[in-house]
Image 1: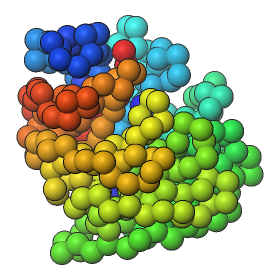
Image 2: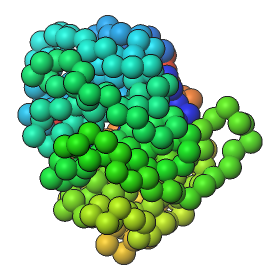
Image 3: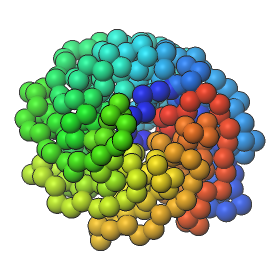
Image 4: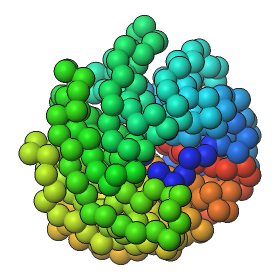
Length: 327
């Protein structure tokens, strides 16, 4: 599971069997901002089979490590819904702050960081108490975040000022701000800076998309500094590290491609052409298939990563955004 200019809503559940790629069925959640629902999609049937109503404008989501719970941040209502996966019921709603956008779960599963793009801060939610226990100011228009492997630090991308706020999770305060490559966009209303972020599987590096700088940067997670910036495609948006840790996948929203980066060689291996404006991405546990939301086509895209091609488009309607692979 792994996070701006796309402050909108969906969630979809996907079960599929392919004659190519993985033969295993897959279940994927997609948050749909346009209809205020989490959609359950059967990708073999290529249709929505269930919808779960959540708060206004659900944006990003993630699962707990044991996959028993899903957390959904809603920019419209500024809260987080806690969803029991087995029953599909909302068990709690935790108020965060203005335009709750991104989520990051601590490695021990005890705290959920909610990134509030409209308030320039982060809400720390105690999941046992189901309430906010701290609020931490960060940079302008924060989007998403990721914890360090040991849980000691949190890296928050700031779409409005093109940087990363590094939080000491114990002290609950920003200890450093990392500047990232700056991009340009003709529309001044759109944020142009840091967007998606993920952590390498060994915990040594952070990979962040630089938005309209059309690149990703690799950061040393211990030293909080950039070690490499790699050109990708126009408006690099979401980033996801593969389950085996060998690759990083980057959605390029205005180039309609996914860049595949070799993390050891630190270079782009190839680009996969997909439908219009690919947004958020997740990957099956075997690393063979990717699931990507397309807000332009209002659909869930299914990508064969082995064959390097898009193999399916599943209509969702509304405004699909977040996506998370379940099983």
